[in-house]
Length: 382
Image 1 (cartoon, helix red, strand yellow):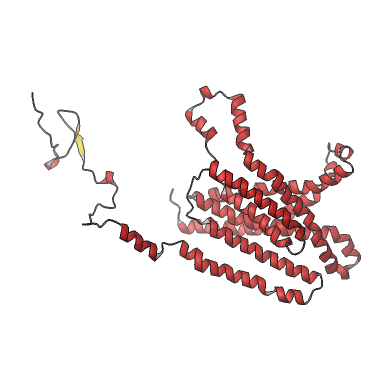
Image 2: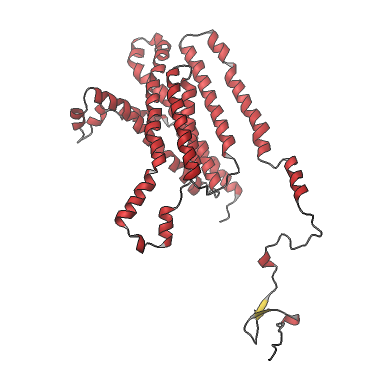
């Protein structure tokens, strides 16, 4: 289906504006999830009062710390499907690589919003009563409460390490689908198309996998200097992620589209964007802690990183998207010389075949002769 480029560009622009506004307002559902995901709030739901009787003591403390993590992971899991629907149904993107690239870019910024909304909401909610009692010490109180949110993020990364990566390796969705087919369907009466759909190889969802890894990187950048205790947890996660995804890419996943390497520069740029966010967080934290010289010394770092993003684009990304002169010369030297140029060189073969008509004697098709009459050959009689 032909889609006008200006119409498509207008759709992309409007989608970016709406999703950008959604990222700004994303704090509303995230904060609501953080506030409601505890045993006390759940027990107030009709029919859920039994939770208080079962979960007590250490178990209650564990669940209260774990429920917000699970709620946020469930909320994040919905976003890629929303972005995919926008790319396919609203913007009418045609290439799979273009769809996944749009999901990557948009999902990353929502992940970034998740991190800093959680930090700000957790710090403010935990210290709200103390701030109201001592308004003049608000910055000092926030400076002390910001590092305490690191416990939540350690739990978040550990959940992705101990639950998320095993689910990726086990491919739970495919496993449940095949168990369902084994129990409720007979392969002997299934069509070949149904069997192929059930056992077709999976593809690596780059638009979802890249932002998941970038989220952990942003968390590490944010708390590396504030609470270094999180760094060993991040190192363990990335070691396990390397093992899991390397095995999946080599033995399980099958590439169903070719992106031309467009994802790698985008991932590198988003990584440096996360580094800028971490640097700004550290500067803000030193200000909250009443530092004077530290913010001054750290202030050039975000500008330097931003400059490097532009340099990497100019030196690597833009030249890498085009054929280099050196490679073009090598291809020309290895190409076979063309003696003459035909006017049908770039036409499809079936468009240059002469018209044929059925033969009157043999019933076979034969080329049309002069005057539009069939050019027949006389059969030899033995």
